[in-house]
Length: 337
Image 1 (spheres, helix red, strand yellow):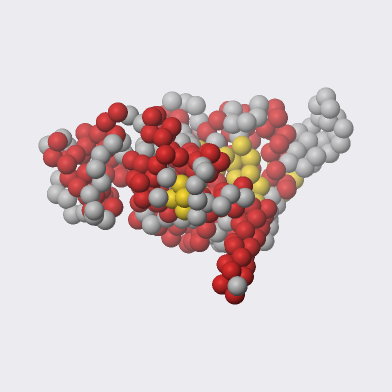
Image 2 (image 1 turned 30 degrees about the vertical axis):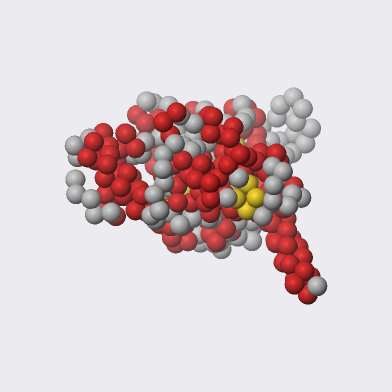
């Protein structure tokens, strides 16, 4: 009876912590789950910059966790007690986004019945997170550049300048350097945003994190849905590790949720992910040897380098990773090239 009461208490404490975090949306470095060396380097950098005002540009594929990293920077620094305001720049038209960012005065446009503060004003003293910054129009690029330079702006339809103390963290899944070369993004704004650059690797480049993330999602989602799921089997984990995850961590989270909803067992097994296996490419299944994941990665990289006769560019393309990432791994595993 004592053990039963302790188990119930621990379960309630876990559910309470999950719900509190979901409600508050406060995330710190300790809440980012990883054992990937590149991600650990990123977390070390974010700790160093947490309490400074410098602008940060976070790059990475969709679903890699760019906003989670931005929140960790904010809530771990001196601005953590102030507001973190998130804006999706791709979700609104130019006119609506301008009003969303800078606010508007009464009568500025049809339906503007009173003065409204924008996101920059609401984030005063804290952090504004501009997601998908690569999608903003040339006019808003010019407006944003002025805010970054002078920390002042006008509300739409206003004549009085508004001053703010805001840290800007921007994110994009585009290569802004290429966008600048193509004339689609201002070079002066790019350099203003790119004071500190963080590039989050896709999930396929950090497969050692998949079991950790899967177990975390099982615990959290099962608690939220009220399902009694204790964990995930080794066979199911093997299947998840082999998947390429084009949607990255967000896709993994959605896959785990679907499996929990449809599962009739106390543990998620391979059968709960058969639909995912059907979406995988025919030659993707392979036998996983009984070795550490790092050693498995070393062998795959070595085999790719041998197949491509030491050509790093071709080997990186075959592995589906950037050349810079492959160079880092070659150095880490002491593979000659």
